[in-house]
Length: 127
Figure 1: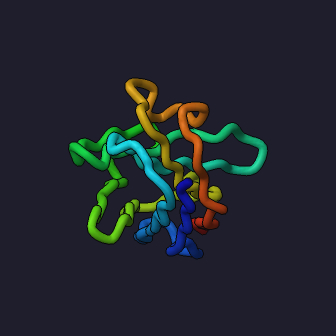
Figure 2: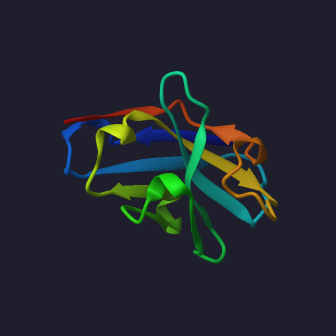
Figure 3: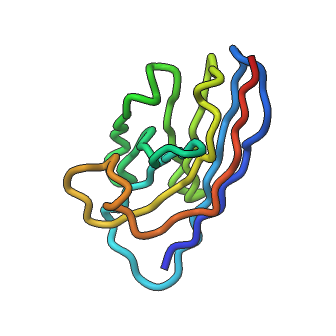
C-alpha cells in the first residue's frame, strides 16, 4: 500500500513559480520499479499527465502541459517527489495530483496506469 500526500499548492500571479511536494508512505512490500507522476485536472477537462519519474533510474518524462516550464525531481531518501513550476500561466490552473504505480513499462503519462493517488492540491494562476 502506498499513501500519497501532496502539498505546496496555492495562488500565484502569471509568471510566478510554485513547487509541489508529494510524500509517499509505503506499507508492506512494493515493487522496486515504482513510478511517481504528477497529473492535473482543470474543471470540465480530462486529467492530463504533467510529468513522471522512475524512482530506480531517476529518468524524467514530461507531458505537453509541462511545456519546458516544469521540472520533476525526487528525493528517494525522503520518498518525496517534487514538481517545480516556473513561469506559470492562467491555463495551468487546476488540481494537481500525485500518483504512484508499479511495473509501468509504457504510458507513464496515462492516468489509467497508476494505482495510488493523492488527494490533490489546488493551483490557481491569475492574470
